[in-house]
Image 1: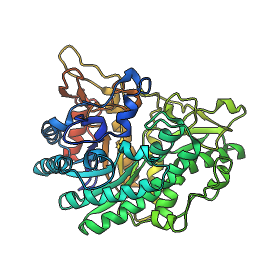
Image 2 (image 1 turned 30 degrees about the vertical axis):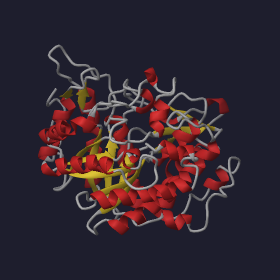
Image 3 (image 1 turned 90 degrees about the vertical axis):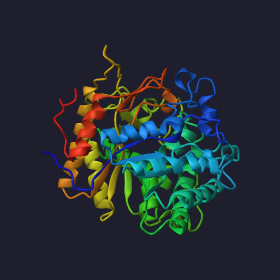
Length: 470
């Protein structure tokens, strides 16, 4: 029996733009994803999050569903332009009121909220002023963090500053497959640095307004990077990608320094003159825990042919690389079963990631703040959705978490991505990550077999047989 520790958080995760809808209600301003998704050709099917799955109006139904499934925690994000329509100035009380009502509803069911301040929905006005490549955006983010902290700090104990800054910097400003759709490697590196700075500034701002019992973290989509061979050339390729995928964020945030070789590796792109004195000290704030998002590993080698360079994990089809300064490294498809995203299913990558961070920052608790898979889910003739592949995926990755705990890693929670099918960024509504099936025509919710299986795991604190609930 694979039993988890008492107090383990069994949760599900979502993000504001992917589920809320109500894009023009109650004073909400435009975000970069509103602009991007309304630009023809940027999103599959030219779809957008104007309605999404209408969580803004159906949040009570969704919270009741979480409780019915047996979840004890819910990770959600706050829409920055719903709170500050232009990214500046006082908070709009209508925007804060929605999150107050959501948090109260969660607490009423005994579900602990975990709040993410930024999940990629930068107010469009700030992008018009330069966006994340501009230093000022980091200071605006800290002001926003304080506003939300003052409003919800009495009821929300767990706080996450930024979700997956790698995607925000390198997919948004490098390859252009995410909002705002820019393809400038210098802007991508500048954005990465300002995400680090924003995290540090927001952490300090939150500590100034939150009760001392509250905890602050960041969620990184850290990647287990492996090399095709043990040759010196492939090992250098692995190290370089690890620096750009992982070290560029966890270096400043966790250690107060960028990786040793990063500046040299990217010298043909920028001289990093935008890094100012004390920036790294500001980025390096005390964390109470660390969130790790994991989906699949990366497999790299030194490239014989520079034309063979490709984006990691099938992230978009842009001709522009999200890896500034990398023109001599190849990405390979790891062997094994693949999800509907084309990502290889490999729980060992999650185990290795958890062990890595437990050794790199000993004593810092870890949470898996995202893990999940997209499959081509369809209801049967009775309206039920049997997603045996997702159950197997969850069982494998939760078993990896349990193995890490058994081997001494302090993992305190797991958040399934995602609670329900939603707007999957540049893929529109074509990719279903949810444990709850959403009919996008009617917006009716139907728990899939995986939701029932995961709920049973949450209630019992152990993993049921994989054929349960199928």
